[in-house]
Image 1 (cartoon, rainbow, N blue to C red):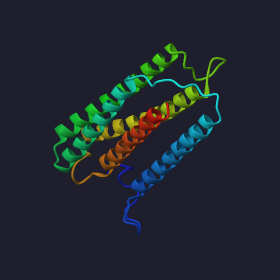
Image 2: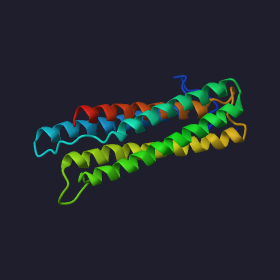
Image 3: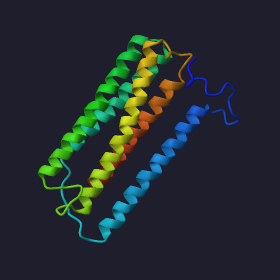
Length: 195
């Protein structure tokens, strides 16, 4: 049993494993960060000197890619419950690939924004562009943490440590990945409605 699965031999009074509890605290913290960013966005927008521009259409495509990755990570979790390690590995690797595709897509979209003369900083920058880069960049950072978490679970799956009797790690990565997908959907809709 590895250290992640055995953080505690006793369940706390809450009935939640300490690793799951820490994950929940982390997600609440991340949510609060983005609530603060989107609140600041609204306040700053209402102060004026705000460049209005259309979001590149590619943001819709990257959103679809990330939503598909939520389906594949859920498939991995369901396969683990059935002890189908071949499908667990395939679904986790697909999730990893889709997550990487999302990040590459976001990077390419930043290039499109620069081509539209929407900059993060400098004399030609506007707060509207800066906020867009910050929101998408900070989400991208958290998605990278999710990819690292996925890689750990992929390794565990190849070491036969992901199955119906060891669901904690795949359960946690599934929860976190769905959270990141829901967070992105919130950000995408927020930006779509506020641009």
